[in-house]
Image (tube, rainbow, N blue to C red; front, side, top):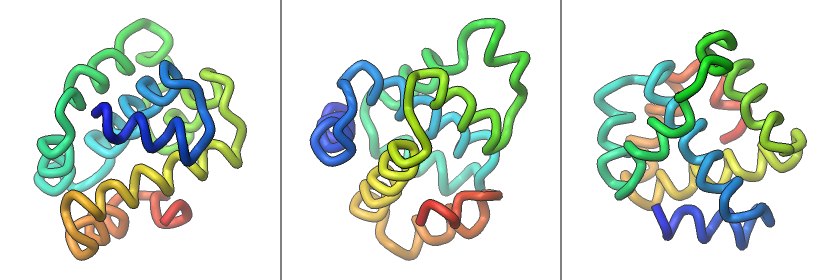
Length: 120
């Protein structure tokens, strides 16, 4: 998790605490919307990912927003991220996934997760 958060801070130019919460939101989105076995393989490669997902999904507001890409985007904007920053963060996270799982397996996650291909 530290490696991924560090990359987001450096490459996407966002604050460390925002980067940590962003990872949880995006991984939570992938878990709920993507191919579960493949996403779980990615989550397993990121130490601390489970805690980040749990932290990002707590609270009544997240339950009210529902799921899907729009809800994930709303949560990210709620952290103060603009659309360009969200795109940069998503691209960095997807590249991190390619580095950890390989391009083919990450490609399957992207292809099988509604709305994700626009960030690939």
